[in-house]
Each structure stands twice: as C-alpha cells, then as structure tokens.
Amino acid sequence: MPKWQRWVLAVLVTLIVGSLLVVIRYKGTLEPFELAHYDWTTSALSQKAQAEDVILVAISDQDLGQWDWPIPDAQLAQIVENLLGAGAAAIRVDIY
Image: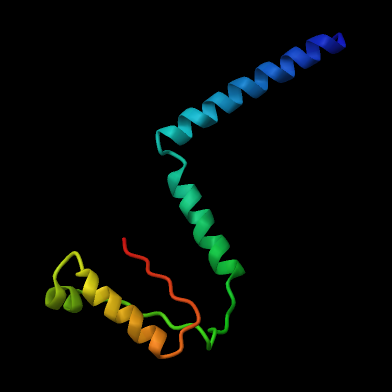
C-alpha cells in the first residue's frame, strides 16, 4: 500500500471514530463514565488528612426556612462580615 493511501486511511478512520465519539458524548451516553472517572480521580488524589486551616460553613434547609430563598443580601453580607471578623484570610461563596 502506497504511503499516501495509508495517510488517507488514517485520516478517514480518525474522522469516523472522532465523529462517533462526538455524537455519543452529545447524546449523554458517556456521562456516567465521565462522572465515575471524576469521582475516582478526586478520591484517589485527595488528601486523607483534613486540613486544619479550612472550615466549611453550610446553610441548611432549616436556615433557608428561617431566611427564605433566595437568601437576602443583607444576611449573606452579615455572614461574610462575621467570617472576616473571625480572621478568615479567604472566603468563597458558592450558591447553586
């Protein structure tokens, strides 16, 4: 087989396989495998000991029942001010 035919064959196979993967991923078929890989990677690379200088502050359903949803800006600002007053060097607010 001439060299140019091998290149054409390689390009065709790459296009076909790549197109199939894009279609399969677009339909969501690969999502369970991607999520399983993500879970495995994060657990395999995580540190076993808990960091002593990191604190997670969570808002529970009970808090939402008291403050309503969405949380008023004034209440969220008060929480951040309390954390800063306690000496927090960095604060991340993640609401989803």
